[in-house]
Length: 219
Image (cartoon, rainbow, N blue to C red; front, side):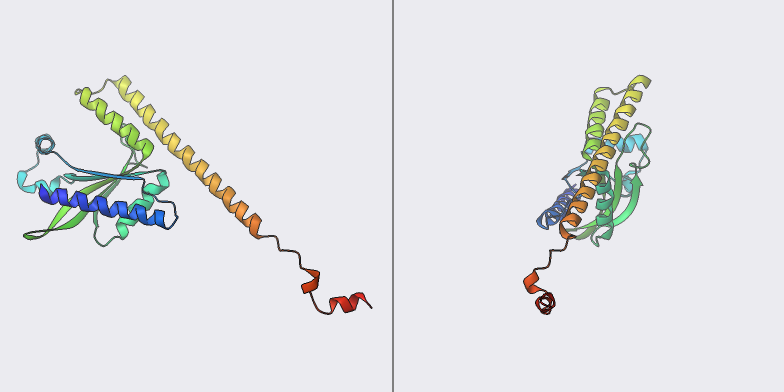
């Protein structure tokens, strides 16, 4: 599992460095938090059994052994992060799944990017698949709680519970949209204020005007 651990550690450092770069420039950063993990062996075995994955094809078929999560403040930030990943030469995008615009039946929303990432090991370069999940803080709150509840209730949720979870997911998304709208209004107000501060011309000082002015007044 060492190559996966190295990949997760390196990717966390690189994504956090992007956040720091935005902050040092005094700009809004689309990255709020970055976390990562390597899937436990027990979880890998369970998923292999459930999805009937050939052990020989494990590294190709199981794309989330190395997993990272990027949390953002706003929905728009999600797509900014995706664009940043696409532009990098050290992260080759293999697959993208947009569950933000196309949420799952459960209500789950997130943007998944599967990348191929090279790590340098003692025996040479090794290419690793890693899944990066990008979501807002509200989406992450819902997904974390839903995941926790599913472990406490191993059977399928009753239909009523599924409906309530779906409504909760919609409420979280409505919160995201409202916060984005508020942000946009504030940005528009700031832009108008700056324009208002810059647009009026300072009145011309009579002493610095056309040198013929005083002569004209004396005519």
